[in-house]
Length: 192
Image (tube, rainbow, N blue to C red):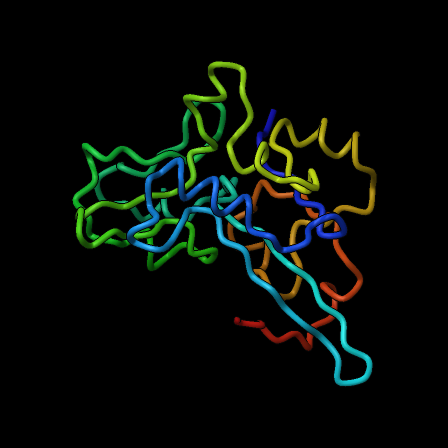
């Protein structure tokens, strides 16, 4: 059994409620980032422009570069295959930040601390979903067994889109129901 996230681009509005819930859970409002991030992209040229949104966090990869390169074992895979971080073992060398193609681990300089998505492990042990999943008003995010998610959401799911790193590198435990525009290679990130 492999656990991971399912993201339905066709439902996501880009509201960033998932990001805000994650920021709140980690108490990161003052530092301005969160383990879950929302990016907006556009493809085409006027008048034929299309857009899409990605909601990205740690993908709890099959071959996580952060785990393979962590000199102390602070980044590790647990018995469920999730990639977790042990603050007590971490020396804040930031190697994980440099090798993760998804930018999942983030460094809080003021606290000399690395943070990343842990799938709200403590909440899940209590029978709850990760906060990003529960916060989504459009139900564009789910977390669970990848085989069950595939079964529930069909055969047209992908593990990567051109705006994300190649799935061949780390084997992300991520399933995406993509928008057609997200499969085009000529994308541009949109910032507000």
